[in-house]
Structure formats: C-alpha cells, structure tokens
Amino acid sequence: MKLSPDETIFWQHGFFTINLTIVTTWAIMLLLVIVAKLITRNLKTNLNISRWQCILEMIVTTINNQIKEVGLDNPEKYIGFIGTLFLFIGISNLCIIFPGYEPPTASLSTTTALAICVFFAVPFFGVKEGGIGGYLKTYLQPTWIMLPFNLIGEITRTLALAVRLFGNIMSGGMIVAILLSISPFIFPVIMNVLGLLTGMVQAYIFSILATVYIAGSIQVKHSKKKN
Amino acid sequence: MDSVTTIAIASIITAGFTTGIGTMFPAMAEGKSVASALSSLAQQPDASSTITRTLFVGLAMIESTAIYCFVVSMILIFANPFWNHIIAK
Image (cartoon, rainbow over all chains, first blue to last red; front, side, top):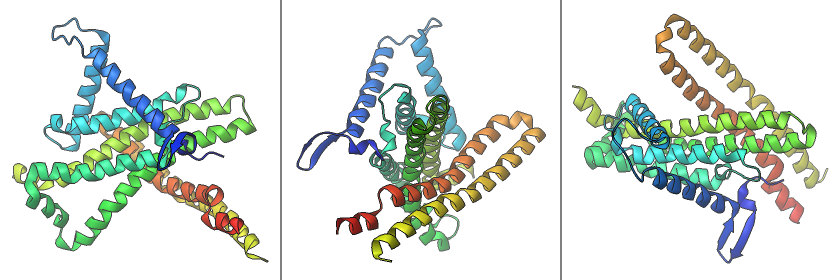
C-alpha cells in the first residue's frame, strides 16, 4: 500500500529522482503562476472590473483582514509569504476532485519543506521588524525562566506544523483507498467531500499559525507601540 | 516464541491501542470546546465570526494530537523498521 506520492518514481539517476510529489508540486506552481498572470494582465480601477479580478481582490482582501486580526499592522509586508502558503496548500488540497491526482501535501517531504520555510520566516520577519536584539528579546518574553521552553517550543511547533498537515491529508487519501475496497458505492464519495473540507481547513490553519508565530516574534515592537 | 513473532505481536497490539486510546481524549476535548463555543455563541451572537474562527483553529490544534497517534499506528503497520530489519535477516 502506497503511503505517499514519494513512492511513485518516474525517473531516477543517482541521487536525483523525479517522483509524483515533485511533478504535482510543479504543476500546482505553474497553475497558480499562469492563472495569476492571466488575471492581472489588465487591472482596472473603475467600477467595471472583470469577474476574475473581483475574485482575486476578494481573496487578497480577506487574507489582509485575517492577518490584521491576528495583530500584524501592515499586512502588505507579510501577505506575500502567508498568502502563498494558504493558496498553495489550499489549491493542492482542492484538486483532489480531479481523478488520478494525489496531493503533494500528502507527502511528508512537502509539509516538512513548508514547515521549514515558516521556521526560517519567523526570525527573518522578527529581525526585519525589531532588529536582532529585539528579536532575541522575544525568547525571554513572559519571563527569562521561559527561555528553554521557548527554544524547545520553536522546534516542536515546526514539527507539529509538518505532521499535522501531512497526517490530515494523508489520512484522507488513505481512508478513501480503504473504503474503495470495502464498500465502493457511496462512502468513498462522502469521505472525499470530507477530505476537501479538511484540506481547506488545514490550509487556513497552517497560514494562521504561521501568522501567529510571526506576530509572536515581533511582539516587542508591538508592546512598545501600544504604550 | 521467536523474535519475529514477538515483534509482530507487539507491533499489531500497540498499533491498535495507539489509535484506540489516542483518539478518545482528543474527542472528549473537542466535545468540550464545541460545547463552550456554542454557549458563548448563544450569549453573544454578534461575535460569531471570531468565535467560529477561534473554534476551528482550536479544533485543528486538538485534532493534531489524534493525528500524531494515527501516524504512529501507520508507521507501526506499514513502515515498521523493526519488522523490516527482522524480515531481512
């Protein structure tokens, strides 16, 4: 039984393999870039905008509002990273409607890569906002006794991000596969619908958690501003 | 009982218990969180979007512990390193 799309290998030469995960990841990336390029070709600012531009504006405005509600004041600085996380994970989980498609997030490699991106983005944004001293002070944040727990917490929450997304998406696919061999008429369809829902919820959770971690790393600047 | 049998028995029983016990406590915690979310929705319906969003985030965090147990069970059944090692001998 195949546990992940990593095991479907198309071409292998020494250390370099092309498996299904890489192919679907690049396909999703191409899809996102081509659709974005096509929609933003003629952007208009009057009242008669095309439907696609309207959808795009709705998505961008919603993500901006969500980032602002978590507590980051200038969402334009973060929407590049957080919006991309949400759109990539969301679209790759939504495409399970297409037959013969396995989501790349069902492989531990993809989710670990995304979690490592968040792991490096948190100090990047923290240092950009508050300087190195300000960022390092957040580790002593509630009291200095919390320092080892904050350090361990950095690693465990990265691990948790990766395993959470992997577990949810992989289990969705595996449930459908098992049900297909037991009662193949209606239940696999219902479980696939549930898989769509959990895919979107997990995309939202991943990006909101990334936003919360980034907001936590620039906390020093925030408390200064509020006073 | 030789070691092949021991490893097989231990893996199968542990996989069953991991998923069985590991999904009980997150389910109870999720039930309590949904119950308190519903009662606070009844008290303040205009904060419903905040409450709903926080509820879903909290549910996903609780769910992740159940997912960890599921992943361990899957590893024990399908990618068991002890079994692979003892079979290869």
